[in-house]
Image (tube, rainbow, N blue to C red; front, side, top):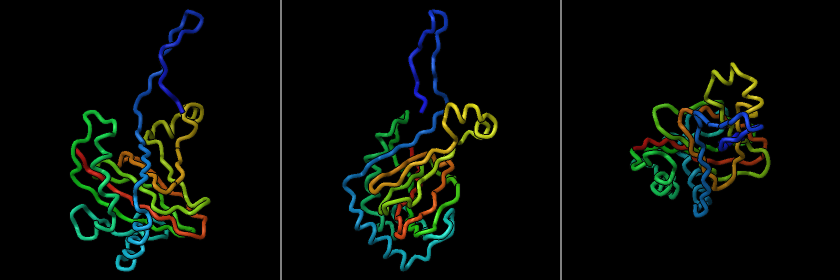
Length: 206
C-alpha cells in the first residue's frame, strides 16, 4: 500500500516527494469487552418478531432500522454505548464532539447469502460490527475505490500503484469497521453452513 515518504534524491540531480492526495479513511477497531453471546441471542429473538426488509441483501435477514432513543434499540446494547468513547478519538480535524443521530440493524447471513454493492446516503459515517463469524469463507467485506475517473480511466495507476480498485477485509468477531457513508461496499457470499451475524450502523455527527 502506498505510503507518504520524505523527499529523496536520485544521483544528486532529482529530488522527489511522494505526496498522498484524496485519501479514504477506514478505521478498524477491536472491541474486547462486548458480550457477543448476548447480542447473538438478541438477534435471533428480534428476528422472531421483526420480519426484516430488503436492502442490499440477497437472501439473509436484514432487520428494520432502530434509532437511538426508540423502542428496540436495547437489543444493540452494549455496542451502542461504545461510540461516545470511540468517535472523539478518530483523527478528524476538528475532532468529533457529538453523536447527533444513529441507526442500527442486525444482519443474519446464512449459507449462500451476500450483499450487493451499495452505500449509505444521508449520514456521515457508516460501519459494521461482527457479532458471530463462522470459521471459513463466510464473506469478506469489500470496499470500492470511490474515484470513478481513476477506476475506469487509468488502469496503469489502479494496477501498479493501488493493486486493484477493491480492497477486502475478512470478518472477525469483535472487529468493527467505520468508514465514510458514501464509500461503496459489498459483502461476499457466505459459503459456510452456519450463520454470520453482524450489526450495521449509520452515524450523524458534529
